[in-house]
Length: 556
Image 1 (cartoon, rainbow, N blue to C red):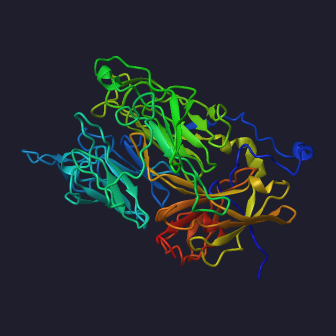
Image 2 (image 1 turned 180 degrees about the vertical axis):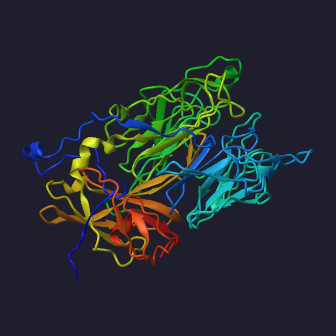
Image 3 (image 1 turned 45 degrees about the vertical axis):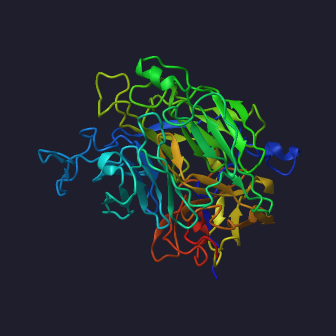
């Protein structure tokens, strides 16, 4: 057997966990790198024209592509369909009008190249998520798109497949009296649960009794649902401690607007957005809201879970509500929220952008640890001149603090040749890493799994992050560590489908490392590897491929 090879690993495997103590004791602290909070992140414009305004955004598996799409009724986009592609018939047109513009694109997150896609029915304000095999499943929309189910696979030439009458009712937000933006949640068995929409019933699959199990107290301060559009996320689920049946789940809700803000915005009076956050432990029968205050006001922002377990808030405005022309004062400054820190110490303002991301903007966590930010269109059409907030086609990437350039001199490596034969729900699995030159507290080492979301209108549908239980962490010899982590116990905690699996330590990130996996000749990246679909209880993974897993069984 050949000696084990050392592979520098990407963000998907080794990341800094801020707030931890480095080294074995205080006396040794001077010999460790100083990971302070001085680096506030960095913005870069990576594309001047995405082709379409990214009202909806999701990262696809297996191909380093993101899907961005808009409505089909806003007139010409900024990119046409290929000449080889038939134009789209405009629904309900009395003159047989055709539409030769693309309203969806496949965006290459590495090269910024775009490939136009043809979406047939209108996905305006629709929902979406990834199926177990990595297929994008989109649902709902407006008019002829209201009952549609759209499928998009990840092959190099794939395009949308549309079933315009697949749903029982229209899944679009109601414009009169009641606002319920339709959302889509994947269930442990791989099916999707659709909630809300235009004058349509929402069906609870379980329980079947129709009884309310638990009613939570009202969150004070204002409105959070559309069009007030606050942000929300299920905070990371901590499986450490070995008792996955007694997990404390907390929800964070931030920002929004006063109930009267929408009607006043129509009269060009823009009320200040909310500045508060509510945090509640939903597994506690006596749950109560704990109120915190953000550094700035925010409405229609995005909330993303970072691999470190922190929460990133970005995009949006400081006045008004969602809707065309209904907001003012862009909030340029992202905010980091650290759930584990003491109250009043959890918020950190980061480096501001210079691009307004207002209504219809979106974002996503990328394989290299950066944040992709796109979209923003407060106009009923593509309007680039004569308006205060033109339709935004530029795409940015934001580097959070864990991508501090000063950390790059301390890249850790992983031992590639040590691989787990099988991986099952609830099973222990081994990771071996080399941190030569740096001593690390074993408590600084964390393994997480992350389900990437479908983002639109401030929603991050199906987003979830798990901090896995650690069975054992030991230093086998100087600089080499054996890490034994526990896979999630069942699909009840981490849904079926393709998920990120990440390992980070109290040292530094390592970026852009490639390797050849055991799948014949396939080239993958150690940061967030997208694998072929397989049964979770039968998969065989090379160690570096632990950065991406595909869960297709609920229980072994």
